[in-house]
Image (cartoon, rainbow, N blue to C red; front, side, top):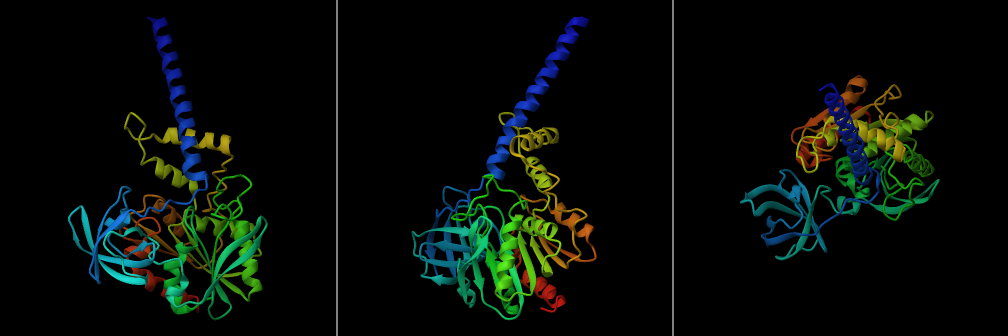
Length: 382
C-alpha cells in the first residue's frame, strides 16, 4: 500500500509538471503571437448598408462581429469613398441596426455598400477638423519615421503616441478635442508600424525601445519651434511616454500628460487577459499559477522583463496628468489607472467613464471627454 501511494504521488507530480510546463509553453507561445508580434489590427469591410435615409442608416453585421456596431456612443462608418459618424440607436432587432448618422466626408453610402464600423470616429485626415497639416518625417536611430504635423499657434506642442496595432489616426478623437486650443500637434508613427523600420528584436517592446523614437520626434518638434510639450498616449502609447520620461531625465519641458486607457504595467495586463481565458478542451478558467509559469517562460524564451515594463514606480515624475479609463475595458484593467492615480495623487486626475471599452472613453461620452480635456488645458494655461 505504501509503495502504491509513492507511485501515485510520483504520477501526480509528473502530471503536474506536464500540465505546467506544457501549458506554460503553450500560453507563452500564445503570448508571443498576441502581444509581441507586430501586425496591425485587421480591418474588415463587411458591415452592409441596408438603407440610407439622410439622418439615419440601417446596417447589417458581416461575418466578423463588429462590436462597435452594437455599442452605444459615437463611432465611425468607413467605406471605400466616404465616411460618416454613427450616433444613438433608432432601432435594433438583433439583425438589422438603425442608428442616427452624420456625414463627415465623401459620398453618401448607397444600399449594398460594405463598410467598417470603427472606434476612430474620424477619417485619417485632420483637414476634416479644419486643420492644416502635412505628412513629415523625423529621423530616428533606425531611419526616417512618418508623422502627421498639424499646424497651430504657440510654442507648446501636443505629441500623440498611438497604441499597439493602431495607427496615427487613433489620435483623431483627441485632435478634435484639442482643436479649440489650436495647439501645433505631431501625431507620430514608430518602430514596427506598417512601412516603418522594424525593431531589431522583431518584437514589440512596450516602451523599452520605442521611447527612442519618441525622443527623436521630440527633437524634430524642437527644431520646428516647440518649447513645451503636452504628451498624449493611448494604451501602450502611455507606456512609451513614461519610458521616455524615465530614460531622459533632462527631457524638454513637459507641461502635461493625457493618457487614455494606459497600458503601463504590461504584466498586470497579461494577468487580466489571462483571467478571461479558459483552458483548451476543458473550459475551466486559466489558473493564475499557470499564467505565472507562462510569464516565466516568456522571459526565458523572448527576453520579456516584466519589472521594466511596469512604469508605475518610483520614477514617476510629478507632471500634471489627466487619465481616462473605461469601466468596461476588457483589455487593460482599470486598476492600472487607479494605481497610477494613487502613486501621484497630487498631480493625477482620473476620469472613470461608465461602460467605455478600451480607448473608448471619447466614444462613450464625447461631451464629458471634451469638457474634461478643456478643464485640464485651462489648468495648464493652454
